[in-house]
Image (cartoon, rainbow over all chains, first blue to last red; front, side, top):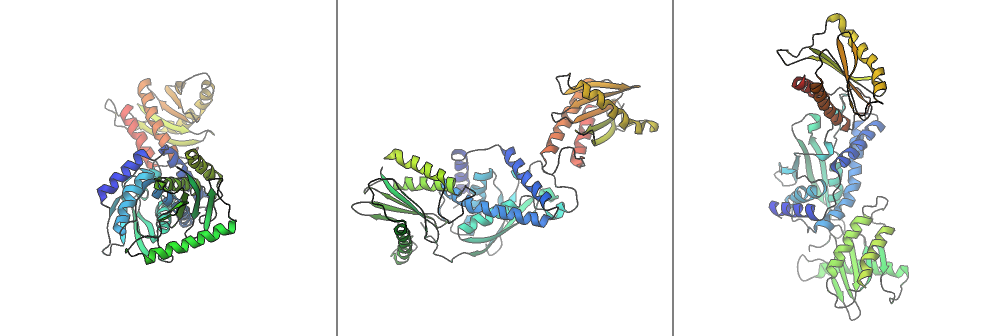
Length: 191
Length: 135
Length: 141
């Protein structure tokens, strides 16, 4: 699917078939989840990252069905197609943002998503205890969501953040790599 | 549009939901339904392999004098079987709508365990409300 | 003209304080409190808290204007909806610029509250907030 076609589908589904909710409600809810996790794990930010990823994974397992039901997209022909679908339709439909797909590896199995805006991190400043800036990936739930969602469509991927404006970097960038296509059971046939 | 019944199968071919919408249907035992689901899962897999057209999916439509069965398989491996009257048009629309209801009331219920039998009351209610007005 | 600005929390604890001078009419923006007076500033503002607590139930508005005076210094107060007090110690009587200054600081304070890692009554250590307050001071005072 070409990039412009994906963008058009994303825009159309966002406008017509999605119920909207106040963005600040989402920002504040997610913020209180992260702040509470940080308190509960007493500053073990690696553990907080892991929990955010786990929560995202559970969300992703379920979100993919909603995504497929609302957008009627067919199977992606290759990983490049998957990347375009994720950025132009997936993120558009759920967060109304379109991260840019860049930095393709030569074997076409890894790419980066660069986020110009991140509604989860509006108004956030990481705590000043010296460690949060180096250890906490604030939006780590998104990595889990991608991992869970793609696993349900037979792709095992690894997703992790490589930079974050909250940490003082210039951009917020997530690296997604395809580990393998899951062929254990009969894959659904191509439509 | 007369829908006779709906079955939902999980990725492994196990039956996770079964509902009749027409009183005239003969009731099978719950074991029979499980066997039916498992058989269909196997048949679906076989048909996708023996198809003369390369790269095709499994069995999609089965039509007889008494009924028409349509199978809608999602990219995640879940199968929706819709049984309706013969020569019924537009079952695709029904399948799509049932999939949307499934994505909403079953998947978004955080207490529903994936691949387990569906025991979501709101899914039942909305499904009935969608199917029944059409009878 | 010099100013001393402090934010007091719900438990009468200071959350933020700073001092600056006027940038208008040839001022260079630096505070010019006489040295003996510096420690007194905090006391003056805190003693004004009693008066603020009396006045706040009488007045309908959040901007309480000038609530107290000490020698030649005036104390003005702005109350937020969460009972956080913005107190300004100043020696001139310009109400409108002070009101606008408080409005800007209020906006910056609300943004600080939106940060999930900030709890009400915590000290504000963010440099972003600090620069916003100084910019507002430069603009209006």
